[in-house]
Length: 129
Image 1: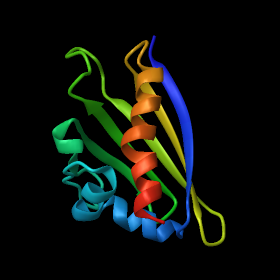
Image 2: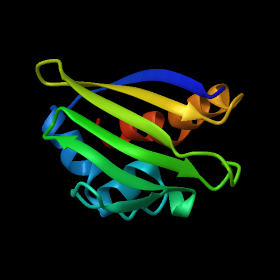
Image 3: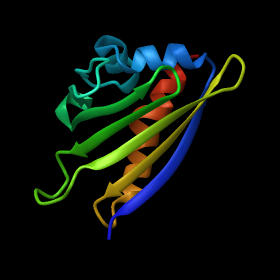
């Protein structure tokens, strides 16, 4: 059985600003405080947090949604990739990002909830202020 989590964060910028920064390696590296190699193209591979996370872009809907296959170097070798769906909700001048992270290794939901908050949400709030 796998773990699934749902989290959200609100940022004081429009969805297009967050969406564009997500797919810009330099900006992504800055707001996540770890090297990112990513491009805005379905089927492209990416790496973030200095290689701790790797995956593939599966779907993009401009400033609305991103779906990615995702795994960390801590996943068991025989573990399937997890899936992240990020929905961008326009709140008239700010953006609510809703993350649904599915198929995490069993028992790891709580750990990755904290990882998202520490490695993305807190630094993103600082970056986009």
